[in-house]
Amino acid sequence: KRVTAHTTFALARSGSALPRLRLSIRGCRDITSDGIMALSALIHLVHLDVAGVPSVDLNSVSSMVGEASSTAEVTAGVGVRQLESVCLATCACDDECVRVLAAANPRLTDLNLHGCRRFEMATWRNGSNNGFPPNGPENGPASDWPFDLGRACPHLRRLNLSLTRASGPALDLLTRCGSLEVLNIRGCSAMDEAAIDTFRVLKRARPMIVRCNEQPTSAPTTSTTSTTSTTSTTSWS
Image 1: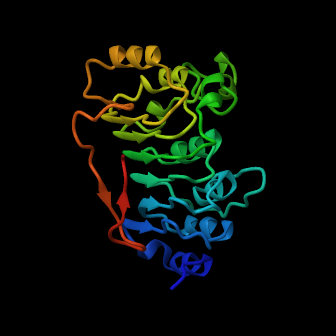
Image 2: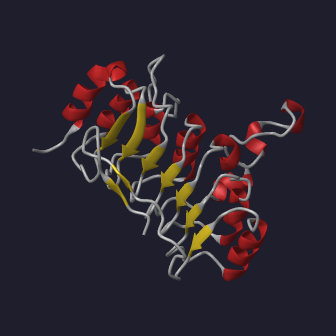
């Protein structure tokens, strides 16, 4: 049976009656933007796998988490803001899309962006979106400061950037991710060895696995989830 927006609308009607929901609609290419937006009613959603769903982008994600974008309409009192793990692999997610999702979900521990070719962290670095001024408005507007993923998601333990456009300088933005244990940058052609070596030195006091084109020193955790509420597979390779 095909999974379409009608499926997510039906789930949304259950909304708050589904505590600690784990949802996988991986590869369901018939789900429209409206179907992704409808997930905003699932306020207790803790795991979401939307890998390969073409309609997952800034507009639909902004509405899903209850954050207005230029075109998304937001309903008061709803929004996915309790996510602990999310897989956006091969989705049309850019820097701003990921920023909106992360800023709305401070409990995130696992974030999989494998194959998100529009993601490069460039705008996080140059401060062209909402960052965190260190000492209040006297330091200028938030848009003048880089987005701090470590501050937005202090519990983030696993981050998969494989086959994205993230470059070496972007690694500077991850040095404040104090809980980070696994970082996958395999296939990031813009990563240079000097930046990777510097990052390893800066993170020497914490357990860290940086996966480039070498064999990993240990196997990262693989989580499982189902099409609606129990189990699917999130790959870290």
